[in-house]
Image 1 (cartoon, rainbow, N blue to C red):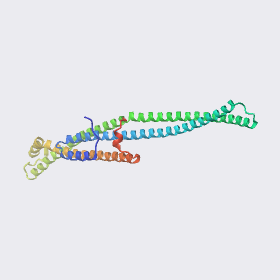
Image 2: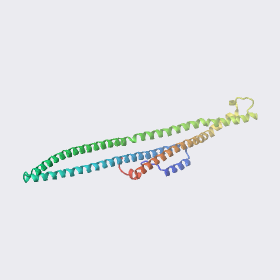
Image 3: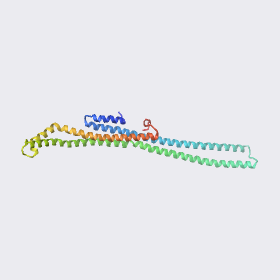
Image 4: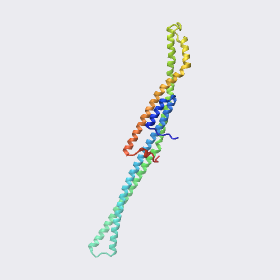
Amino acid sequence: MPILSLSSKDLQTYQKRLTQLAHTEDSFAVIKELHQRLTVNEAELKKLEFAVNLLQIQGNHDLQKDAVKKEHQKLKDIRQTIDDRILIVEQKLYLGIPDDLDEMEQLIAEQEAIVADQEKLNEDELSLLEKMSQIDVAFGKQLAEIDQSRSNRELPLNAKLESALQQVEAAQKQTELRSKMLSFLPILLVPIILDCIAYKIGINGSNPLIFSHYIFLMSLIVIQIFFADQIRIKIFSFLAVKQCDLFFKQISDSLSELEKTKRQIETKHSIKAEDILSLDMS
């Protein structure tokens, strides 16, 4: 089953779920799940940015091609005009060389003008062909660059997710270790307090060495057997809740930033992310 992206409503549901979990180990599992879903949001944002860039590049290329087509049409019109002028001159010459000197000079001048216009037209056509080639080359380079970015966009996201999951696992292990260390305080403190009370009222005798006192040893054994695990669980639960709350806030802030960036893109380009993401550009 594919992992779905995360929404603000989903985040509220997860927050309620975290407060209702009976086992704190499950809280870290929920945090991992949130990171996985947040990665989908990040991937969708990357896809949106890629799609917008691609559409921009394609749009700019289309505008350039349209401009070139208009220039090409102008050159075609000019060539047609020149062809018409050539035809007129040929028709006049077909009727014979005119006897009128002025008319003859006009024909010669027209022929020279036609040749000059043809040379200029040829230069303009070559220039336009070069321009078209440059546009196509630039477009190809842009497509190659954006295609490379598309190919590489999943690598940093996967690495980021892996790092986040490892961080959660490390935090869970650290919390377990801290809870075990902190649990020694009440496990030792309660027998010490009971021993002090017993010593003051004379139950333990006059020996000040605490480890030789019956009350201390008995209370330590009782707490270790019946209450130590509960104490560790309570401390672990407290520390885990604090740690998961911190992770949850980080995820919530990241989601807010992603949503903000997505809205900025939508506003800037007058698009809807859902429409763009539905296009097959992956």
